[in-house]
Image (cartoon, rainbow, N blue to C red; front, side, top):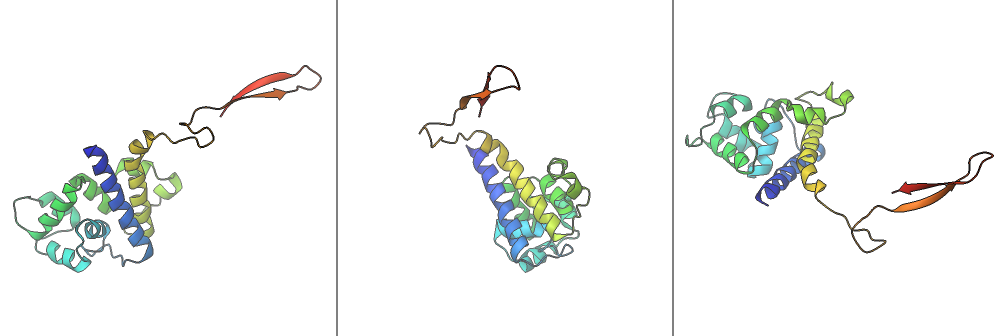
Length: 179
């Protein structure tokens, strides 16, 4: 159950971030608070882009460098920001991949024609990557869901039907179809 809630929390954070990026938020890949990881950090921490950027500027480097240099006992504000993201269930590798849109599993789930042209610093590509990642996180949860069959009142079961098929000039054949 804990794993499920962690998957759901991460998927929701990704979807919230994607929605904000797609509808309203300023995007600037070179800004620590409004780049790919910066936007996810805004969602998770509820800090502004300026607050995240200010925290990040207290130590050298972009998000990838910040993630490499991360130390949970440093007391640095950017490490506290990263702590919150890790506490939600993201890994440092997840966040590093997000900044470059480089996770092989997420990329494989994106249609080839889009995947081949994916650019880490393009808003629409970031939105697609975030939504695809959320879909992947939700898949194992959805696989265990049984939907009710409202026609019979029970759980969905295969429906079998006999359908007459008449070949040209021959006798009738009945085919069994399963829905």
